Amino acid sequence: MKETNEFKTETKRLLDMMINSIYTHKEIFLRELISNASDAIDKRHYLSLTNNSIASDSYQILVEADKDNRTITITDNGIGMTTDELKEHLGTIAKSGSKEFLEQVEKEKTPDVDIIGQFGVGFYSAFMVANKVEVLTRSVNEDKAHLFSSEGLESYTIEDADKDDFGTKITLYLRPNTEDEDYDKYLDEYEIKSLIRKYSDYVRYPIKTWVTKYDPKDDKDDNDKEPKTHLELETINSMLPIWKKNKSEVTDEELNNFYKNKFLDYQDPLTSIFVNVEGMLTYNALLFIPKKPMFDFYPDKNEKGLQLYTKGVFILDKCKDLIPDYLRFVKGLVDSADLPLNISREMLQEDRAIKKIASNVEKKILAELSRILKNDRAKYEEFFKDYGVNLKFGLYENYGEKKEQLKDLIILKSYNEDKLITFKEYLDKMPEGQKNIYYAIGTTKEVVDRLPQMELVKNKGYDVLILSDDVDEFMIQVLKDYEGKEFKSINKDELDLIDEEESKKIDELKEEKKDFLAKVKESIPGVSEVVLSKRLVDAPCCVSTKGEISFEMERVLKAQNHEVKAERVFELNPNHEVFTKLEALSNVDKDEFNRITNVLYTNALLQEGILPDNPKDFSDYITKLILK
Ligand code: ADP
Image 1 (spheres, protein in one colour):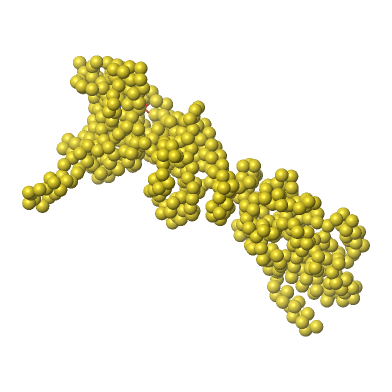
Image 2 (image 1 turned 120 degrees about the horizontal axis):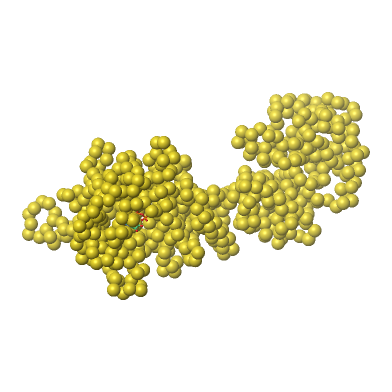
């Protein structure tokens, strides 16, 4: 008996789109059909747990090409379909994924061809490459077999058929080649093998195809030039992915080779992280930190993201929603059983499972870093040299949203110890009475050492963190304090270094010298304030800043074309001889006084690594001084 049925309207629309699709990744049809086959085997296997009579011990998916007839068949020994199921599953679109796909396409007047690949439209994708599709199937729930056949237009037919064993055999009659599209390539052994490996390598059941073999024995007693070959059925996919194994079952060499092949690195990774989660949400992740940041000729192609698989089927190369920006250097993949195959990029962003996985992946990476910091300091320093700046940015980003998670992973150079230390280690070594955490901006210890502002801190024996990355001070500002201890810049903040009495004395003196200080301020263009310093010992003066913007920030922001100026404060050491001389001079020779204050000020700026706005004036001053 043969019956003809009309496709439902929705299905027609979808089919129409498949047939007329100019989508370039038509090859995904094989992934879709293999994945359906694998699901069908899953279902049969599941049923067989309670119904032994339908069990099989040789589940497999067979992909065969027939060059003469230009057909490809995909055969599984899964659950099969009854007539009703054929109508229901292949005659209508039940799946939400396909429905959404349709809606998306209808929304856009000219459909974006790329979205086909993002959705993955299951069975119907066969019509991208075939103009006729036959489905010969026998359900484990029915004695009879059926043949579904369609040319993808208006209707399909279903008729009774013969089939010995359970399962489904799908035959695709390839379309004729066109100028733009060579459908014959799907008949090619190598193409089939490479598509299986690319998309379906980790499907749990063996995917077999006929492979040409050459055996020298076949060529015996033969003068023929052509080598003799024969065909053998071979399993192409590796089935059990390395990330599904237990970490203890995988050797380092295996893991390193996997990483190098998959992520195209020539070095072993710095570290690898296995994640195995079962429960409400089941997934595996395998993550790697490359030894060195990957060099990339095309930085814009170097998108962040982890590979995404669902049930071993490859979905997406760079799923950016799985990894936060600051961990963009992490390579790896996530395989979840809880995501549909047809998930789109747009859906991924909103997907709660993805969000949950991403947050867990982030936690695992940070936990691993923390472990390395604790157990292998040298390795952590190696890591931090290349990626520390990413963590610092991560801490700074979004107003310090991640500061709690990241603050203990930061290491900075210690002035006293001349090595990298954590904030916690700084705190642990703080002598009694030290109220704040001090830091200085400078590229090296030597540079910082020369700053006059260091004198008092050094005298006290307090340690100073040396900040050398552009982002450092921004990060410190977001942090504000560490376990209640405030961060103080030796270049700008009130340092609380002298005792109250002395501080009061200076304040009183400041009042007394008000007029003199005003004169100094007047003589120097561009200075915001002139004060008596509470941070100097031997040096006559220094420049500090007040307000949010420091000299370092001024420099960093300037490099990004933001013209902001730090407010300059000229600090004079009231205990220095220069101070006395200058005060005397202020009442006698105004010109000379002006010259000297400007030279002192410019000098102090130079010590901070800041060039004078007008170098010519400065050199004129110096010349005049020499000639005096
Ligand atoms: P999806 O697989 O995403 O549900 P498809 O359009 O690919 O969507 O398939 C629709 C349905 O047809 C499947 O859910 C399944 O029930 C049935 N089906 C497809 N292929 C097979 C197969 N090889 N064996 C058994 N059932 C199948």
